[in-house]
Image (cartoon, rainbow, N blue to C red; front, side):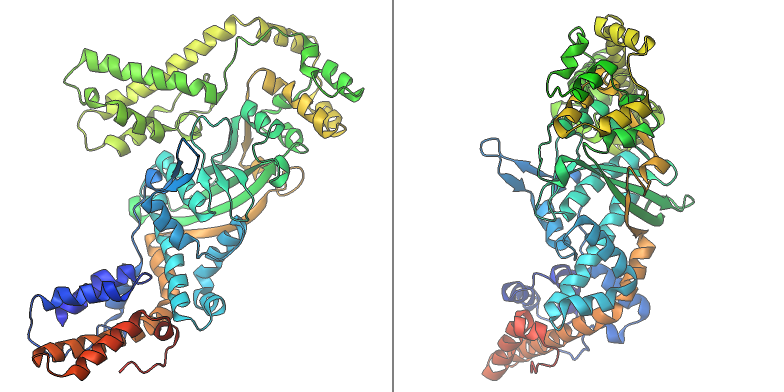
Length: 565
């Protein structure tokens, strides 16, 4: 019997939402293969153990999903673009789809509410169904536990990468791979429509919402999902507030969630009050033509030389990838015994994915424009240590290779910019005041129609010079016009806080799981007596069969007062 209960605790609790007759019988057969003396023993319910033992038992009930950006992401077959979800992604979605809410905001609010009103929420949402009550509770606890692992197990860059996968799974979405010609990180499909989302995760007080202005304009001028949020781009902005004295898994605090949308109507007004407002300046010649009714070809009026060209972050990424490959090869040739020589094509691919040079602003210093900004050596070192910390003597050389590769890209773009007749002409236009002020540009832009606004954006200073845009925390979280940022909710994160929220629903789990263990006790007693009696008492076999069926049946799982004897 004690062996049976050990299996129940280790195996049944892990699979509580998937329990079926075949699984249960397999567990029993494993015990019966090793005969043990028959003795009476009370069922291992939470009613007859200490508080610490009960809490430990409940904590084991929360499935431990492996944190893996690659495992959580989805892929598509090249032939028909059909989505293929790996087992880890399917497992994660299986739990997160039970989080209540039809929008991202509603789901976050639901998780936040569960922290203080867990039992009441489950009673309201699941009603009398035991299956639904257990499924609801476990799903919310999986959310808390997995989010805690994502945020506390990794450095800023790695956590952001997995956090993106986690939120995509929450909203039935999919991540957007590098090189997809968009500033979006993932697609939100919680509502049934497809909303492109750019995600930012920073510590509270250090938030920056920024990126390639060129890519942002392209997304608004030629949206890939024009029917969603007016062809706009949604930004989900998250700030972390953590106890800085705690490290690793002992960290705890909260994540605040906000969101706002860039669209054709508000983009220049938002950026006019940003850290880099000059991106919004419009050429007087173009504005006059648009005001007179011109609909297309406005940028050609400037007669600028063809771009040589100053590349966007997406276009520069292959240059960085190649430069890093060359740096690693160079170091390997100079020192064949170095562990860096062991980095093959597959390892390089994983390294580039973890760096996410195109979109990961966390590894850059203050200047985050690709092709202009330098990498932060300390942050790059921390990321490399997370990836290869167990490999001796690789962290320093690999960090140097990454920093040097970025420097090579910067130098190549400086050389190209100096030769650019186009940039020289644009600078001459600025010197002659041929660009409107930021304020006047925004005013004139607001008077244009949809097609004309697209023309204006394509001729704006930030687009012509491939600039970066940047909003600080105050600007990004502005709840007033023009940003209209919405506070979505806050979620507590940390191992201690997971135990705290578990305490909110402990009594509910005690009641539900106790009923199941009662049936398991009857089942195991009947089987032991049946086999100990030489397989002669058929009524005991019938009782065991009935109890096994009842444990996995909807009828018993949904009714707490059914007689299973």
